[in-house]
Image (tube, rainbow, N blue to C red; front, side):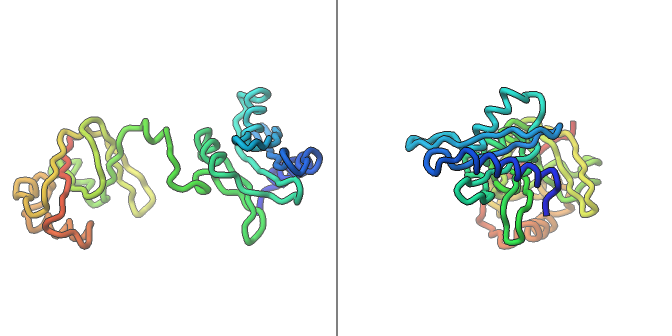
Length: 236
């Protein structure tokens, strides 16, 4: 089910699509819902070189008429059949760049539903994330030893980091998320069998054997010849 506000948005897009489609170059209408409840409409313009989709045209109209009223939802309708259609890949990325939380009305096996652009476009390129400080996710069981300074490094496989500012993130089973500002001070890539007792102690373990047991828990199947990254850090 969708909300009454989204039903009204679908109705606006459907009316626009049925009224203005010509069955050839203009077939898809889109409607945007703004934070204040306004509807902004658009119509695609097909061209063999690639013309703007209905959603893109609606966004251009929005920039002209309601630039300070954020977009919260979008729906596209195919005029010849009056069916709700999902945004194409290009439009999904454009909407994601605008705001990943925008709701897209799509048709599923259970009827119309609203899905965020982030869920509609998994693993999207996110320029916001690219500009953010690197985040190092830690098991919640390590929080106390990191706070005390006993653990000053982490060993990672296929999880690259670089020297510089970082945020340590603990996503707990309770749902709580704890973060700590840190500085990555060095990264050394070695084979697993070359790890030392000193590195084990810097990782908060009493012995190299304990470190290897932890690696087997976190990375099942890790071989002794496999390369690992030893990432050292300091809390800020």
